[in-house]
Length: 196
Image 1 (tube, one colour):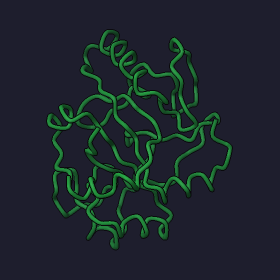
Image 2 (tube, helix red, strand yellow; image 1 turned 90 degrees about the vertical axis):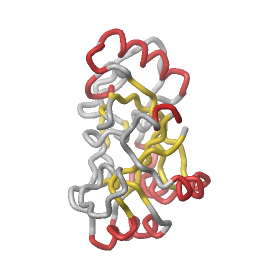
Image 3 (cartoon, one colour; image 1 turned 60 degrees about the horizontal axis):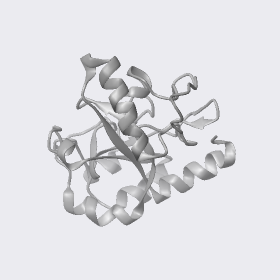
């Protein structure tokens, strides 16, 4: 998987024992207006540097991770298969993202459709509804403490189910939700063992 884009978010919500993380900005809420000190180190998804909204970004420098901790904000990266990345309207800083891969941790997998990162958790079939915490059972698919799919192979079953039952939104794709180590540590301190 390759990093496609990022979000800078407020602290995640705890919903029915799950820490609500997602690649979709309708679940884990990005900041509406990026702090000015961050703007020199990010662009929007297309590489434009006049950016305010924290939901569709490209991170350009290591300084962002330290600054986020001071600002009480968190970073989330979206990673997709290479053939999916080429179909998206994004311009990731490939060399920088390659340089930080060892600094990122996989939180789990979401299922998305479209260039707006719309999640099956809100608009499709998914084992948990992160906005209200409703948990369903989908043939043994396991979600983790973040409300994300634990095992990448389970994504293909959910994708087939979503493509079949909701053809208007197809194709659905897996997306890895990655956190930088600082954000993950702070989320762990914030919620401790409260995540399911």
